[in-house]
Image (tube, rainbow, N blue to C red; front, side):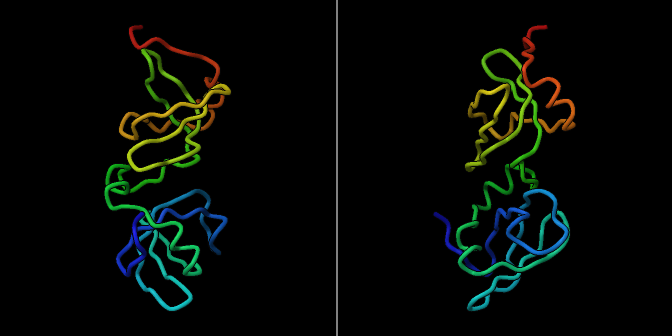
Length: 134
């Protein structure tokens, strides 16, 4: 587990902060006080979190770098798996891997293999499988 420091990266859920954030995002701590942490979102915007909440949301620099500084959590994606392309939603991010829910199934994939797609595309095609050979 990564420790909370004044230079930590956080994986923040929008419901945990006050402000105009509509999806999960990565942020970097800018100020660390006794009871509160101030952060700067890597997508723009800033906010604060209680220190105990921030401590639970710390992630490694490697995770942030591998994701391209964009949180894949709750995002619609296309992912190759077992010779097929699956469309679905990322339900969990763990280091360099994502868990994707597609058509009622869940599977683990490398974050680097997931491609963001339009939400409507993932919704319409979540029950359709495309062979990679076609």
